[in-house]
Image (tube, rainbow, N blue to C red; front, side, top):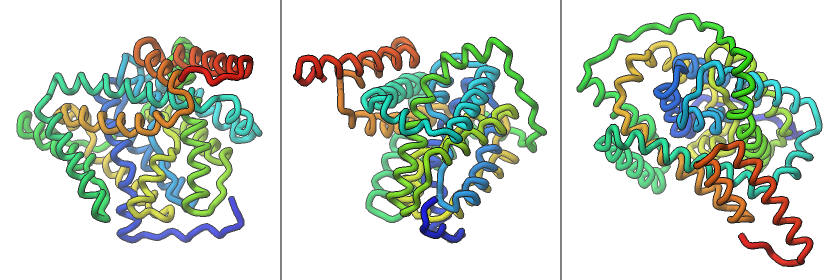
Length: 374
């Protein structure tokens, strides 16, 4: 850390408001993953809550946690087993724990071109849009209701100093609608977590399908960008390797017991700061909310009755936010090709082709002395 003293933890309305700043990304991704896979949202929320509190106490800054977006989007878009998710979490946890004890980040930052990272972001946004279409077809009415609520909150939050609670309101509307149609489901306390043991085959498939696209996204967005933004917002120099270490630890200790792969995030940090978070107290608030949700309010029956159209609406806005950042690229050609390949083929192929194309165009530019197309 820098020589500047860390702020004391504060627990006021501003920190509580800021604690909700990233819920619009976290909640819809977790619920969507739970609805299309055999992941249990109760354990995901539980470990999110525990690690939100631990990171708040450790960093004493509102350093957020988010589901690993590449893993989440690929799970939502296709059929991925809990064993493969657990294997991916273990591999990713080990990778980032090792990277946290080395001098790799300067090399990695130079090795991966910006246009490749932007292409992965845009590809994830396209996959989110495609996934949201399935929810629209199943429940168009509540999809458009969700869109209206989110847009309304956006306009109000833009001109008034209030947190954007649209994700919570939209999910609440979807839950109430489900109760009206299906009746109130029985609620139950969370049982003790069961160890998820991946099969040997899960590791090879998880590495190709989930780990490769996620590694680049985590290094660039969740670690390097978060470190830079922490310095901008709080004048605190948190080295990237510290973020890498906590990402490694949280995944190695959570995923085997039913947690979902998670990381930090510059977007979440900006969101929490925007709505008032200035200390790790916001993280403690967020952690308590997630633990309460896990212990009492996320039984499988509750998740199954949510009007799925509202989740489609939430995913659309998550995709818009990701695509908004992805178009700030230094090569529209490379970024566009990667995004299309991610949508039509796979993230792994998109990354490999994108790297070849990025370095190929750079070589061509150097050889000819001309700016390549894109």
